[in-house]
Image (cartoon, rainbow, N blue to C red; front, side, top):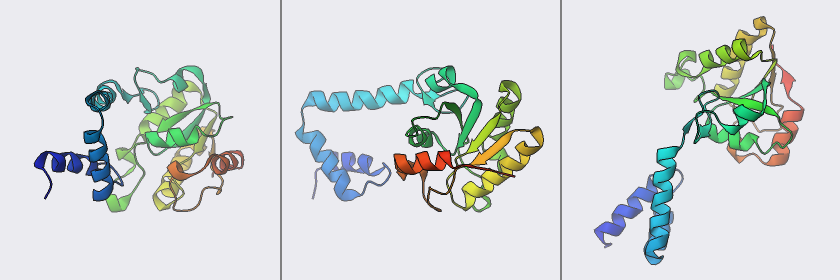
Length: 196
């Protein structure tokens, strides 16, 4: 039987993705066994991140400012479309990519009752119109929903004269970008193909 306070801390750690009871218990004991300063620094970092981090008003990536560094400093003529902000971190492993990103915050998924109006496609079309975008790289996950979303967007953009490419299949079907290594992502970026 564990102390109620410890159990509460364990339960909070269990709310994190992929953290089971044993891992949550190790995290809780680590906090308890560490110094009070370490615990305060940990909790302050969480509160600060939750308070200061928001979404870039252009691309939707995480940032602590109105417009993220990538949108401010990079070539806006090339836009890499991803499902969620953590995919930007994965794609940034491709060192020679100089374009910007567009975060959809989801994919088209009839099973989850999510259609084109439920993700940021309208905002992408606005960016293409306003920024003179020349190429859109579809970097959604290579699964059914990711492919359906990429094809839907390609059909919208092709009549506008925008080059639409898809990452090559260096990224395994059914996998998530966040788990892909740097070499695989670089090869997928280099070998992207035109979508029609």
